[in-house]
Length: 251
Ligand code: 13P
Image (cartoon, rainbow, N blue to C red; front, side):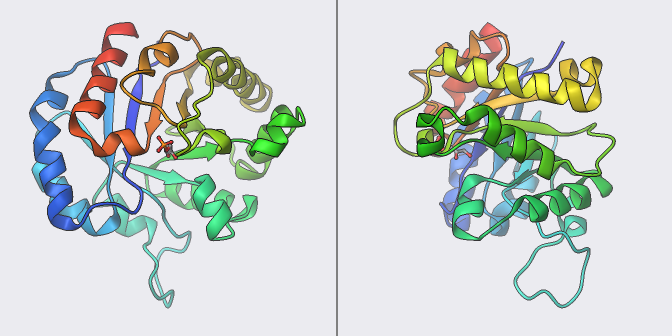
């Protein structure tokens, strides 16, 4: 049985003070919800403060990015070693990083290797763009992304995958539960070919893209979907708590 996971990707939102306030608003309610892994991914500058706030609770922390080198002259970058002290999870290969910061499959691969090496749990994001979806190329795109991201990684223990179709991110145009379930089933099948059926059945695969408290149930009812990577709605305490609660009731 896979434990569902709901992660809030705050993206480039919240000052330190706002991040603390947002965490305080949802802390008690989130902590009480059982059978779901709850992960907050605030900006880097708030990780330490939020880490203190959630100490001793069931809530976990994640970063939104990481560099692949351990240390050295890489001005402005944050290393896996620095994060390993602060958090459990790290989002890698988000489509916004691929789009705006030119992250290639090779870079994503190096980041995953570096994260796994220090015991960080990567949340690998993959998903097709609108034109690729419309051209019926979803399977080809996610297969290529999986192959390049996981090159030379023989053990994916600790990895979570998030299927985030780019056309559904921040657009209010979510995939349907069925569409997401189908794509995630396909991803699981590819993983079974790469790592075997057992590993594929144990792997958590999330859906991301315009998930809200209003459509969460539709996704969580789907058998292949093990949770969500939530953007905009994770910045609203009541919305995020509601998504986690619905997940706990349905999974
Ligand atoms: P939205 O939930 O705002 O569409 O963002 C999804 C996402 O990119 C999560 O990583």
